[in-house]
Every structure is written in structure tokens, then in C-alpha cells.
Amino acid sequence: MSGNGMANAERAQPVLTARAAGLVGCAECGHVHPLGTQECTVCGSHLVSRDRNSLQRVWAWLFAGMVVYVPANVYPMLRTTTFGHTKESTIVGGVFELMEHGSFAVAFIVFFASVVIPVSKFIAIAYLAWRVQRGKPGTSSHFHLYEVVEFIGRWSMIDVFVVAILSALVQLNFVASIHPGIAAVSFALSVAFTMISANSFDPRLIWDAPEGQKV
Amino acid sequence: MTDSLSDLIACPKCDALHRTPQIAAGAQARCVRCGTVLMAPRNGAMTRIVMLSVTALILMIAAVFFPFLELSVKGLGRKSSVFDAILAFSDGLMLPLSFAVAALIVVLPITRFVALIYVFAPMALGWAPARHARRVFKLAEHIRPWAMAEVFIIGVAVALVKVAGLAQVTLGPAFWAFVGLVIITVLKDNFMCRVTVWQTLNARSLS
Image 1 (cartoon, rainbow over the protein chains, first blue to last red):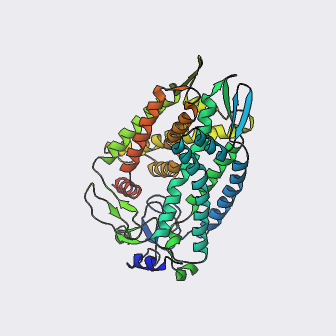
Image 2 (cartoon, rainbow over the protein chains, first blue to last red):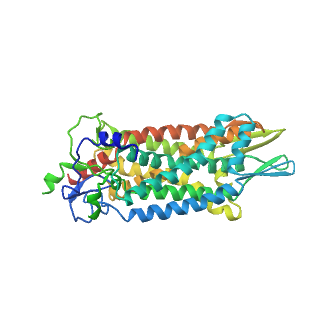
Image 3 (cartoon, chains in turn cyan, blue):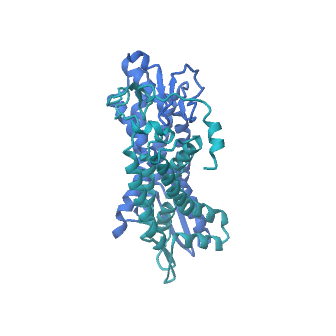
């Protein structure tokens, strides 16, 4: 809790929420309705002041994403055959290969997209969901963390696309051919599950003070 | 009752309540607490969104069917299109991944462009919104994170570096079509503010 001093400074401005005013705001279009309204008159979305059930979906998809991330790293992502020799490489192995070739920038992109982003996403989502469950009111830095997680998730798909392009392109019979490995499937699933997890999170929960929790 | 409520707007991301601001075209209104853009009206935004979506649709058709990349090594050559990249996973267990890649880089972006044209074209012409325009716009917004054309382009760049040592690669016309497509998608998304669109849709359907 070292960031408390800064956090309090950021929260200096008191804010009236729609729920505190006895209203419910639409999470899709922002239109305001009296509390208890079931469906938004503007966009037809289902209205909930705070979607606390969303946390269960968040945890479920997050665990699913973490589970399939394990085989994604253990099994080979690419099978390269050159003149009859077959070499299999995992995600991290591919990064090292790129570094041996001297393409450090690309190695960095791949490492960032396939290792750093997924792992920090797991940690960030778990941290935010845990805070909400403990009833800790968040600050704008927590919200920005959520925004970053939601924005950056899709970029992890890069490696899956790289494998798809390489397998399509490098099919030169005996000289060289590349085939996708089973890790490509579990990696794609991991990215998709974590994206669903982040999308199910109701960001309005991040801001709530503990007394609001009972509603 | 509804009159006074429609003067208010709740931030979709943090629930902070605001009075609907009167702002000039080109300006932006942001949430006081979390900084989410609440309103960003622009002159001719709808016409521009329709134009850009149509352009993107045409580029997408070109991108799928023209040769994308050409690889040559020791006299052996291979041309591949985006379609081949999709089929890369089509053997055996990988088949579902083929469908997923097709959806992410072609089907969902196309669906989104068509949906946006359907929603905005009638309004850009000054007509009332088309039937089910709201449902279609909601669909377009839900698809948004899953349309990954720009991620695909970065993937292509990485793949090119990986192959560069092995063989010579020539970029085909489809590659440039795809790059154009990504730029246009980014431009278009910058023109669109979800809350503003909903308010416009609402106002136009009432009149």
C-alpha cells in the first residue's frame, strides 16, 4: 500500500456516481435511467448498476487462459524442415534464434508480445479482481492499468499470425518447409481466454468504496 | 422525468454522473474522474466513416485474393496470399485454428465494415436510421477487439525478418492493400465516439 499518498491526492475531487444518485447508467451508451430499469431505452442493453457476477466470469476465463498458456510454452510452436532435418522450436526458443541472427528488435517484439504481455496480463487481471473482491476502492492508476490490459491483449496474437504466415510461405518441398506446432493452438486459446476475461470485467467496480459493496 | 434524465450522462467506465455538455464540433468532453471520452462530435463524421469503411472493404477484397508475399530461393519460388496463411493450419487437429485466423483477420473486419456502413450510410444521407441500426451498431462494437488486421500486419513484419536470412522475399500488391487497410481502420476508429454515436442514433430515430 505504498502508493496511498499519491492515490489520495488523485481522489481529491469528489464525484457523484449514478448509483449514489439513485440512478443506473448504461455501460454501453452512458444513458441514465431510474434504478431498477431493466433495459436501456437507447441501445437496448441489459442494465446493471454493478455487475458483481462479472468477477466469476473474470476468474474463470483467467484460469482457463493460464492453464492453456502452459502447453503453449512447453510444446513446439514451429517445425522447420531444411534438407531433411527437422527442428522444433518453442516460443522462447524462437526468440533465442532471432537473437542469434542478430535481429534483436524483432526478438524483443516477439518476446514482449508472447511472454511479457500474457504474463503481466494474468497478474494485472488477478490483482484488479482481487482488489474488488476485498472491497478496496481503486484510483485512476488502477483504472489505467485496466485500460492498458484491455487495449494490449489482442497484440499477443502476433506470434500465432507469424506461424500462420511462415507455414503458408515457406513450403519449398525439400529445401525448406515450416509447419505449425500444437503450441500455436493453445497459445491462441490462451490469448482469446484472457481477452474474454478482461472484457467481462466491469470497470465501474474498480472505483467503488467499501460501503457501496452491500448494494 | 425522462427529459431531465436525458440531460445527464453516466460515464460507462466509472459511473461518474455528468450533465450532458454542450460542446462545439471538433471538441471533446472527457469524464472528470477517469478521462474516458464521453462526447466528440465532429462535422461530417458519419460521411467520413462510411467513406473509410467502403474503402477498407474494397482494399480487403484486394488483400485476400492478390498475392501477398513471394518467396524465392535457389530458383524455387512460392507465392502466397492471405488465403494461404489462413489455410496454413488446415491439416488435422489445427483446423479450428484455421477458422479462428480467418475470422480474426478477414471475416470479423469485413463484418464490422459492413455493419458500420449499414448503420451510418442512411444517416449520412440525412435519412432516418435503418431498421435494427442499434442492434447492428452494438454488434460492430462487440466485434471491435476481435478484428485484428493491424496485429496481423505486425505479424507479417516479424515473419519477414525471420525468413529474410533464408530466402528472398518480395512484397505483393495485397501486402500494400493490407497496409492501407490498417491505416484506414485506425483513422476511422479515431472518428468514432461510441457515446456520441448512441446519442445521434437516439435523436435521429425519435424525429
